[in-house]
Length: 196
Image (cartoon, rainbow, N blue to C red; front, side):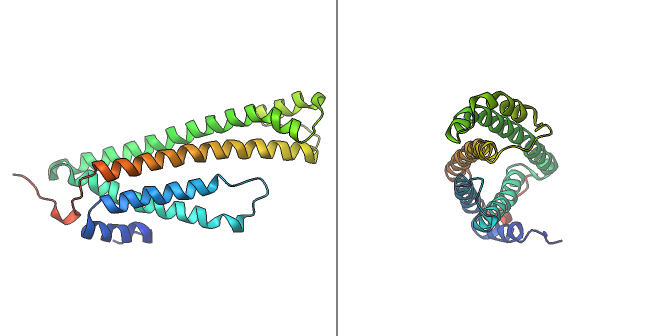
């Protein structure tokens, strides 16, 4: 049955012709370019200016998913293919949870560390800082609407946290692209042979 993801399906066909190295490396590089582009976001950036970066990141993910699974399957004998597939899926799930947790922690840390400077830059009175910092750390805004200056300061601090996360992801993707270019054996899927 064909994959519903057209990028993954097309990548699977490319693997059979070129091997794993090209789609993996290209996918990581495209993903790095997309996340690097997301470091330009600010609180007023319209969605019309960045939607294509999200589409590009999705395409990059599709380019990486198929060859990473196929490379694991052909790296072991036929009788161990099920174990290899399970290991790939397990590590993929672990990576998703761990990555999300680490990036969330980085975002929260960056938000709190940048907030005082942003409050000062937007001329928020120092007497209001403790209440704003408490509201940000607890996620509770109370019953009063925040002033435009406070909203702008929090937005800038949050954007700074997003930029930090996207910078880390860009670096990871570039390292993965280098590793795939240097370490992946470029064997097409159809050359898989079983040993007796």
